Length: 445
Image (tube, rainbow, N blue to C red; front, side):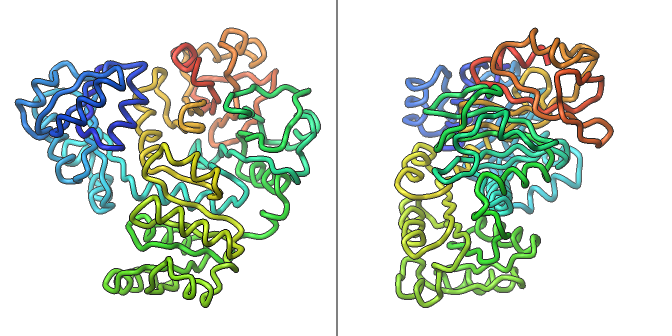
């Protein structure tokens, strides 16, 4: 595909890095230094200019483009870019926005603003956090097939009951598939005789009930009760959405916001939350409010460094689990190494949402594992699929190593894939694919 990305900030650069190996990417930005940096670091072309300008878009090759992704830091600019593209070309347009009002307007009108797909960074990030809070032992959770299927990633601790067991022994769940093991930075396909080790990260795919049951087995102490004490530190848009989603789950979160006006606004918008106005780095305040009693603390402050500091303070006070929003993706591993339980990068969340439109095989949903280690794809099976009308044990032989059939839904019914299961046209299949073989496997699916 010929893809034009307008905006070479953190999100645009991340999307460009994901797409460059498989597509022809052109990046447009008004900052010449950003464009030059990407030219040197990635296999992309760069155009310096205003992305809302017709001349700039023509210089970037808009007439030949298959897709245009508007990913500047300004919502209105991104919408104008998509509208301009729609006026002169047939490219598929994607707009990244932060304000959910634009998203609601777009959802109510087919292709409003000239946008084919709109992705809201703040809402997607908050939804991802809320899912992890709802499944306390998980590092990552993604829904598929309208919620009939879940993919979740768990890290085994030294005390996990299944550490030291083989997959054959640990696999006692009716509607669950062990998709992969992430060990020492590599992806391993699980076999019956594979032994699970402490620090392994295990990716499973199954029905929500079976994933919850597996979570209870991985870490019984952490999942023996739903989180009751959740604290959101930072009243940003992401923080607001996290609190709102927790309210919908029946949790009464505490929200700590330093700004007077913003704290009052949040108190009005979040009737089921407890909003407190204070400096979140004030240790005396945190001790007085018994932060250490919280089951989970989510930090969504205005800088990665502050999020790290407050997360570490929370851990020292006895908080069971910390989740930190980390805008610089390169910091995620570092922050998790020094003590943050889960780091989440908004730009990774957005890149994951956009990736589905660039995959051969028309993937309906895509989840990225550890940014670049693997992908989980949801595909509606058509007559041309290599899987159709064949037992899985036969069809899988025609796919490269590194592919696992994780789950099947048929007429909204969950089907656990087994060797003799036959996949039919219109089935929705959730498939784990090692990144190294995605380009080979996807066209066959």
